[in-house]
Length: 143
Figure 1 (cartoon, rainbow, N blue to C red):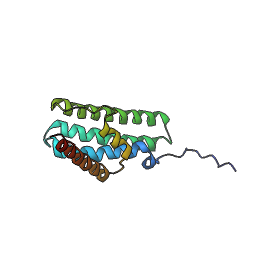
Figure 2: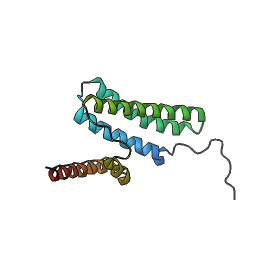
Figure 3: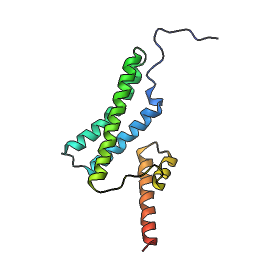
Figure 4: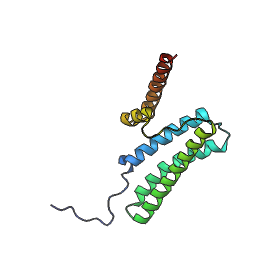
């Protein structure tokens, strides 16, 4: 039996969207990263946190708007993408300015991270601790 048509299509289920969940995790990690490594008084701190927040908020708002305007949904989704790209560039600047290496897509640590499929800040923190221990063990074995 066919469901009856409604005036407005279903919309607003953004919490189930993988993009929303990942953006929320990126926001949580960014807040922690900035609190730890970026001076709270610097503009960069505020810009990174706001870019991460904008990614989350615009995905949610775009999902809510999808019921009445696909054009607005796409516009807000693109704003979210642009905000997260801005954040990526800030992270790359952080690495470059400190002479730190950006991982290549096939870097073993990055491969392990992707395989773990972290979904919470706590899972990311546990992975970081594991990688730190692994690095210490690898370094100790090469001395």
